[in-house]
Amino acid sequence: MARRREQVLDAAVGVLGGEGARRLTYQAVDAAAGVPSGTTSNYFRNRAALIDGIVDHLQARERRDWEEFARQADPADVPELADTVTRFLRYATGPGRARTAARFALYLEASARPELRAPLTRGRQAVAGWGSEWMRRFGSPTPQRHCELLLDYLDGVAFHQVAFPAADFDPGPGVTELLTRLLGAPAEL
Image (tube, rainbow, N blue to C red; front, side, top):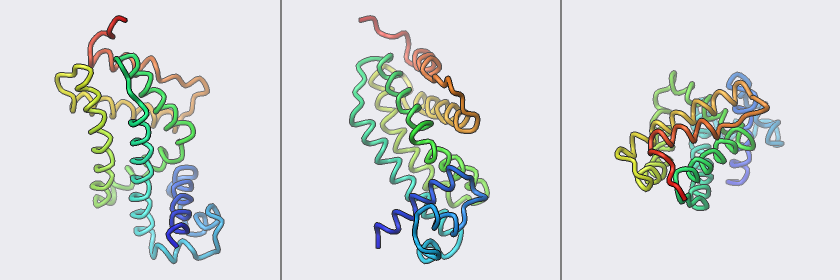
């Protein structure tokens, strides 16, 4: 039962991120999940409940991705941090594009449904915790503020790439410049 609900939510994220909020219907989610008609409505009685489920599901998935990413990453200096962040941005706008687009759609939904802001903010705060620690580690005098600036920049770059995909997308130079300006000149080896 829980596995089927996860299957429906994965499909809902895919529909929202791949086709947009207007195409997020029970029928579209059922079709994308490959489940019998009516399955999504059995789990989520109305659109608001489906959106709430997507928010929670997406936050859990992205938290797991970020935890794995942060666990594997161990940058030794600012250039390695820039490379690490660039890899994650490429993942978020490449293989993770549907989830990224779904998150942006949920941000817009939160403008009409303020109750979504708290769970969406919690997800960002978790990422900011890890990011602030990296900023502190590399000498930031204001690690939380610098992390917020980095996350805002990454959201902007990701949004632009998701909305207007560029075949020659290379976020590395911009990420490197931002981190170098925030944290100082890269250390010489």
